[in-house]
Image (cartoon, rainbow, N blue to C red; front, side):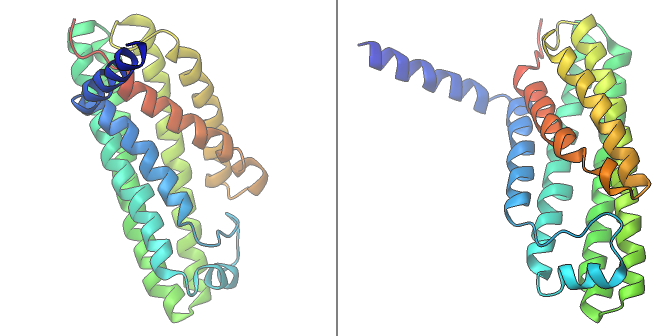
Length: 226
């Protein structure tokens, strides 16, 4: 009997989650990002030379493209859904301005991700495929700088999420410290990618994990009704 009740309870939780678009989008965000790392080709340093970029991506064109589609395409769509639903939810829970800020910064980050997807395709099937080292290096550095700017935009989104979780019933209070920690680490890694500084850019290994946790938790815990 206990086993049956437990199974039914888990099934009920899964069904409720599956019917919640914010939860589905939040979970999809992490799944897409984790999958992108599973197909990740040899990844050069943020300040790699053009010849190092060509050597790293040559022969890995389709795995590199799969990585860009998952991380910068599908994950960005999932992020856009989550932040739009946060913006809508805060209309009924207070913190309307903070909710709009979450939606605005999140959508801006999604648009930047889609731009990175285009740049990534150009890099892989253009200068890398043609062996043009100088162009590949310049495009790779530009792509990294866009990624760094996106991290700073996501840091602003994280601040707005912290405000929403403190001032409204749309998100739980325990999300606040996670969002603030995410803000600090994203700011650090973003500067590293903008400046092409490997030591500072390495903070992305922390900020990246925190970003998955915060976005997924936001989607799963978002309260869309009073």
